[in-house]
Length: 250
Image: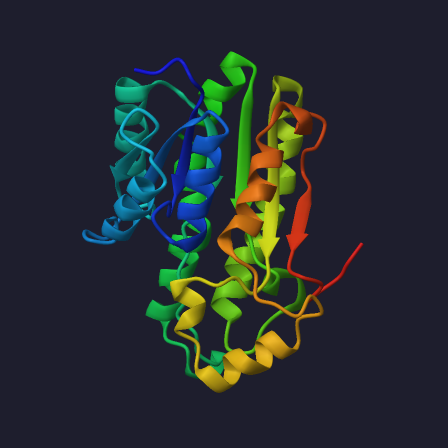
């Protein structure tokens, strides 16, 4: 068991999750990356190995974030093996894009369960401990589309907008306990999820970005690193828009 603060990243083996894992480990946290699909952790292991990060700095935790009881067990196992979770980054997410009039109940529910209900399922099992210890950091990964909407993504946009409301409300409840709750809304980030977008659509998206480039996972990781630091102790209930100027709002 390590004396360092433990950070749990849901969806931690994905593109953004891997970047966040690497950055927080570099900053001195012991990082546990959650994953649900067997085999999806292979690329993560390779990335951590290439970065020189072994079992003394990072670990994996298998579990379905849509299952409340499974998350209870996962958090308990992490606590037993590595120590209590001090930092939670809710990063798990999927897309099932379809215009609303063609969207099936399964497509709706899969995205809501994975992207939004998961935030409740995991946070609920770590929040009491954070409050009792008087220190905690929760960062919820939303999306630029939660702010501006996106054709064919009523399910995804609804889930990511729900994350913003969850963030503000929970921040109010736990601010006096030394726990901060913030969100990050990434724009177009170069990950496996966005690489699956049709080439012509992808080109149009890139052309619309004022910063004239696609974001990379490290752009989000840097923002996460700030929000979980002691330097961000007076920031809570906020949403950081990391989107290259794609959507600007006050």
